[in-house]
Image 1 (spheres, rainbow, N blue to C red):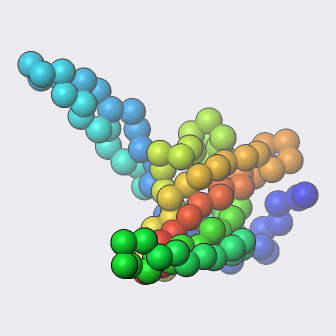
Image 2: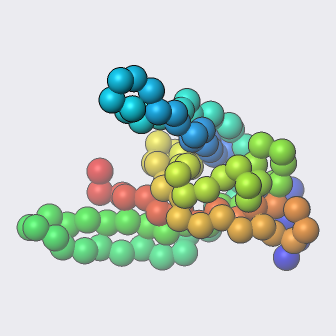
Length: 115
């Protein structure tokens, strides 16, 4: 499956978490800074669902984003600790895989749509 430029009709923000450190007398975990990168992407909604839990209805949507492979965005730098933002909706990344031979990256992510 080739990555085609004309398919990248969205601009998404990738929020990439950097590793944190341990510091202080109590060896507390301090999260690292978050790097934000805006990249062109394609978007395909895969599934949606609703569930009832503790008298509340929750809705979520699973989406696949495709972006070009780069030194900043690849299967080594993007993982489940990161997130994608599009149109004010935050998607938590659940899986990342390579497209072709370093042509692109497919990101599967889930967003809560009831918030």
